[in-house]
Image (cartoon, rainbow, N blue to C red):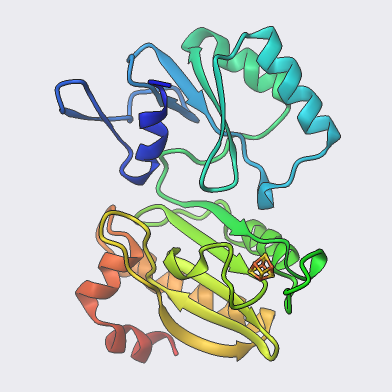
Length: 241
Ligand code: SF4
């Protein structure tokens, strides 16, 4: 299980060596995360909404068997990490998987975490799964000052941990509640409510304004939680509402 530490460090993009020294992951192959042994890598395919189908599952099983991948782990971001491969296998593994690389260390939208919502959950009041997929597509490919994570929950139970994501979208009977600046890191912070009872279209417009402002004014690697703490919630609201 010694490889798992670096996956946890999706939080910081750094590796902690046995001597407690931090090293960046900037020099590792694209889309891969160097592991503690400094010889093997983890990869995390892009799986919008955490959804799997028969073809993806079959390919995963074939790849794990063919390359004797030592560890496969579901991550906190509803992704599947393949862990412990040498660098010279990575291209072949990606080819056989037939999946796009998920974001691992880049400063951009990393994932949209969703719950099943009204698709299947009896408590659901909004279609969080469909809206999460839509938001993932909408904001993918944009660069930000730091990684951005979104959580979309189909009701106030907030199973997608939306309140501690950079952007939280929570379904209520009259529409969506939007929170900004949440964090589940070592300095946890609940996101601040920016709007309530708004439509999906209004959420997208609001988030575009929030992320445009964040992209322009945040310092490099400054997550949304620290950004809001630095500039002040009321100042942020004055600009984006
Ligand atoms: S947040 Fe609500 S809708 Fe989503 S899984 Fe939890 S209980 Fe169901």
